[in-house]
Image: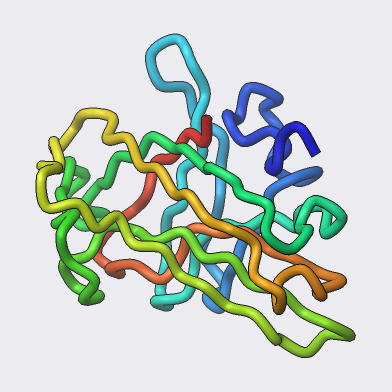
Length: 168
């Protein structure tokens, strides 16, 4: 459990073994792209609010009271124009909020834990076209520690945006 996510930085160049689409739309996709001298994931063609990417993580890492930190770099692209877009880090409303990290857990395929973490930071200004760092710290709740299937994802954000993300 030294790292919660596998191939988070996309350097493995392979999404299929670790990341999968959280898709309700048939045409949405996740691809590995080159950005400068690194790789990142691009989530595009979303037609449903809940579309994004997710990964099943080792549920043995989720012991009650353990603390974790997830760090990612993100860019947003307006899929209609191809221009970089920006979100508001101090918002939690769908049309203005930055893409949230969502952690959910199931027991026997029944969802018993679901937490969403927004980039709520009044002092942060989103820089369109630049990498914007996002950090989530969380402590594993009792409910999450009981789960036999735990998913971490980035989805449920404005449909006008494609997401480029590099999980650190």
